[in-house]
Image: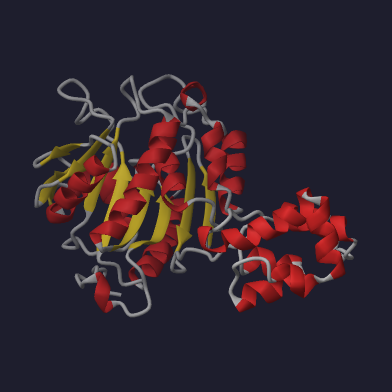
Length: 374
């Protein structure tokens, strides 16, 4: 792989949709880059290899846009202006540490996304010149993207109260997903954060590894919404304030089992890497209790009469075709009324199964045997 992101219009990807097509959760502990003597070199190599594998999978999706969602650590947004969310709209940004120098930013996408998020009811700040710390560039580099590959940084405030609530982060993720669809971009979203850790405090070398394992196991099983059980106070107490980025991802993609999952506990962090590299698509779903459709309201009215009117019920029992002729129905709906088949009425005509059930009981029709679910 050459580490680039294709800059093609979404319409050129036959059979695929605009929006979020892939995602990842990766760590950004500064030790991954600075490599002090405290670190296990073999462990760091394993973490980097896991991130590279996920990055390879994301590039294989041929995205138009790569987004990295993360937070600052005291470099920006601390004493000047501290917005809950901020989108980079410049064309480049300066890196830090061993990632010093300019990084290319997809500012045009950032500007368009800022407008769309405003229409979604959010008021994200925007910047033209804010730096990108290693929380962003480690994700970019270790996932194997070429340095010249532009990306879109989205900042979430996690360390300076008042931070956005978990519910607000979740809603931001849902709005982001809708906005990317409207933008017509096929995007991959990389969330760069850390599980329990306490930078700047004496608790830094005491992460809650047991609690982090539970979070990781839930995420690896596809239960992203588990992280929404952490309210603002719990995020703070457990050293998981950076999981607000995760809560954004939960809103953006929902519960989905990742294709890749790796766990590496350290003395200061748990390095967790998860990747969704199979194209994310909307799953077809037929609800068990559908809402009534206006175009089939006459059919629903006829079935309701069987349930609530004894005379109508008796007429139906004695002459089903004749009863069906009383109603202004297309031929296929009239035939369905005669059959009174639960599955057909629910799936094809969106008749609520409770109504069909009561009608069948009223006229003495046998109910279908259903396998009992354990």
